[in-house]
Image (cartoon, rainbow, N blue to C red; front, side, top):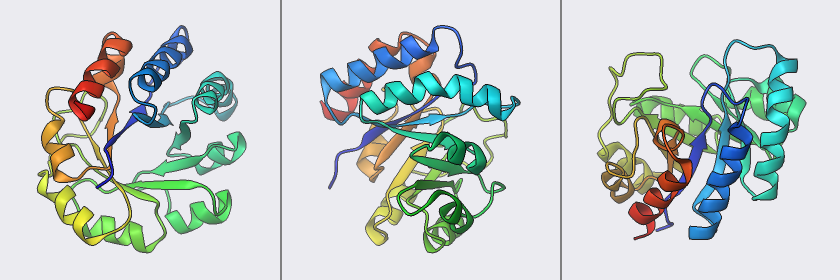
Length: 212
């Protein structure tokens, strides 16, 4: 079984000192375990593409320097403009097939599947590179109510049947992540659990929980 890895999701505000924070977090991940953090999702809302591209540029460079995949949330157009490593699609953001046509064969395409086996199987059939399940715990970053709360067993079911990696998302912290790792999550998607406090301490705590 492959080791679970961290998939960092940006806070909504990525200006100011955030590039320095991202650098510190990725450096801490590399120090502890070279493969601890493997992806970063650029998630901003309500700004135009020019502004988004301006904010993305330094973050994309930091990710490239650390060999961390740079994934754009929701927008295939922005992912294409930035030549990002991939895009993460919500259920209303278009199909993986269309994203693949726009972004090419190498792009990493992920799909939010909430607590739905059916959505996940559909995403896999449409060519998704990974599926994301959650929120597993109450989350501070999701606007929608956490009505669909999957159980860790969903990860076990998926990983036993399908080759496509699965991502666990929603309110994940170093203290509550163990059941998700044991259930078979390939990636833990974390935002507030890292950016809500000292990012280096958080990465250290995740490394301890995930790698012992």
